[in-house]
Amino acid sequence: MKTVLILYNKNGITFMECMIALLLTAIAVVSLMSMQSLAWRGAGKSDYLGRAEGIMQRELETYENNFMVGTTASTLCACNGITPCTCNGTVPPWTSTYKITVDNISFTINASAQAPVNSAWLINVQVTWPGSVNGIKSSMLVSQAY
Image 1 (cartoon, rainbow, N blue to C red):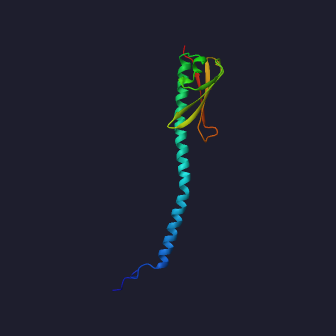
Image 2: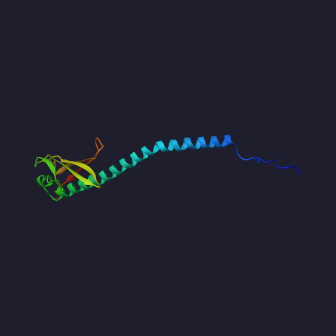
Image 3: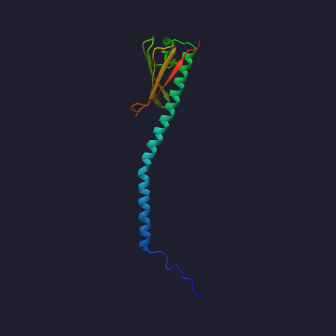
């Protein structure tokens, strides 16, 4: 019977092999460490974006409800009871700007509505936060209930 070829020797690994393995591991760890700051930045942006989206949707639904039940623009210009805020006019078209703080993060809300056309209002809401240039914005077409 033929002898089986043994693929290893009994001497173990050499010093050079250890150094190469250590070098490759160090390169992998350093490259992963450089990605950590990008990951933290992405997670922070995602957190801001998620909170701003929730605020924006709440504002759109609040204004939609107010218009559907026939609330006037002068009532809507009260910034939903949040102070301080500033409003530009009390007759359509109107704009409202105010800030709210959620978990020590300040969000600025700009809401506006265009004059009704065939009893339909165009509501625009934009939410910005520190570090964002444009933030996020959305609009909704709302008609009054009669």
